Length: 96
Image (cartoon, rainbow, N blue to C red; front, side, top):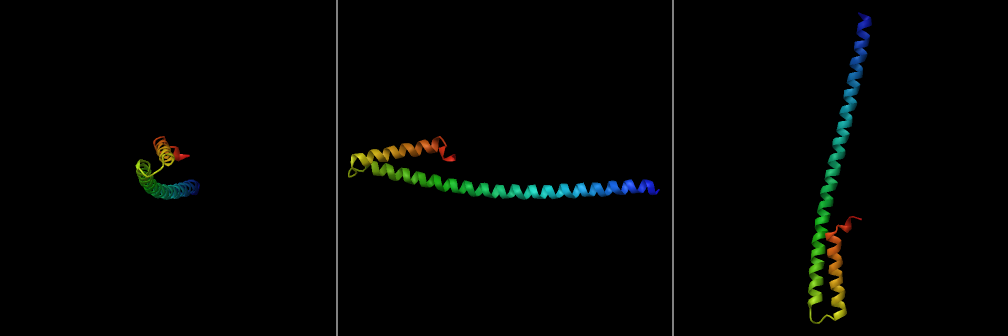
């Protein structure tokens, strides 16, 4: 009976250790995923704020370039800047 009990006891201890370590890894993975989700939400909020700022800047440049008191070279520069903003946002070059 002692010969049969020792292997069973070792098997139970090994199974409990494996279950506990698997549980700890799962808890750590869940914590990491929740941190990444939180960071992702913060980044999305920052992107939305930047999109609003770009839209406001684009509107300001559009207003500036169409105002009659603005010299022609300034208006052309404002139009070029608008084109650059569009290129950056449409082609997603802000990722780099």
